[in-house]
Image 1 (tube, rainbow, N blue to C red):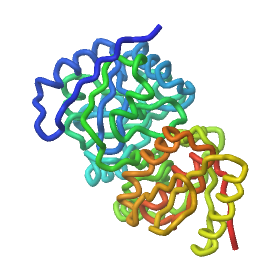
Image 2: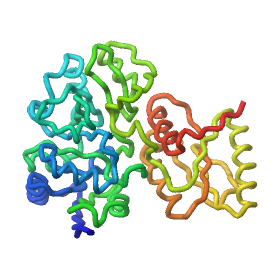
Image 3: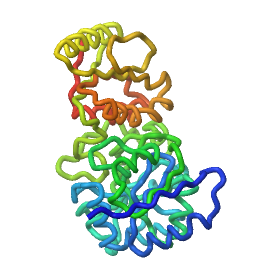
Image 4: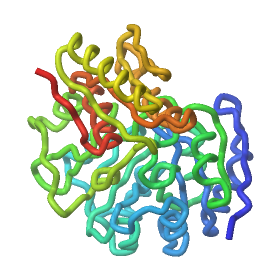
Length: 344
């Protein structure tokens, strides 16, 4: 049975607390609210209410072993959800909170295993977005919130994306325009002495290393245990097939042109994601931007555009995996289900 979803437009630069307070109470009472953060839109519910948390999984079609991130507005709220944080975790909080950093901590017993994906750890962050923080303060509870999209689909960087996926499945959607960063938070595991980045984001490896005093390097996945959201399943994917082409630029361009012509001869609609401005013969060409900050803001919107244009296959240029480029390539690889062609 479909819900009646109320869309609430809020100007992020001129909103008043009164516009948020009643929504906070709705969350406390078990309702679901889609809200903006600086990264992507989140689908929020009371993290301390098991029935409310179940609504998140139902709305998204999310696997039950995929952990949720708990959002807090003040450090004192951390005591509600996690055991005492390590010194390294405290340093990371001091440096990057509020902001796009999620920490993996040891959870308190009152946090239901549905929130933690069945694990004894919990993912926590303090968003920088003012609407998000006011919503958490008004609710007087920590808010569990994964990205506000159907599970596996590209994350929502504007309210229209969340409306497209979740209208009729949630109670409220706040429309506050585009998000600032466009990539989900960096996730860092601080439950052991060796700090690990489990999901790359706009806070980079080098920035974290400077705070923790460790060389982190490229960490391997954790086998069957996945403490971070968005690392286990095919994710961020358009409905069409997607292939990443990696190698010397000129050879990559030539290979994409050959593949495009071949696919179009077979009557398929081809899309291309490029990171440098140059001519392509495909019907649908999306230029993501020359700088990684701009690319991060655009990539999920572009992936959704291919669905809107009923694209059959997408070819995507690879970029260098450094800084934010690491996070962008992580999302693209997952969107392509790791289908990568390397040209020598």
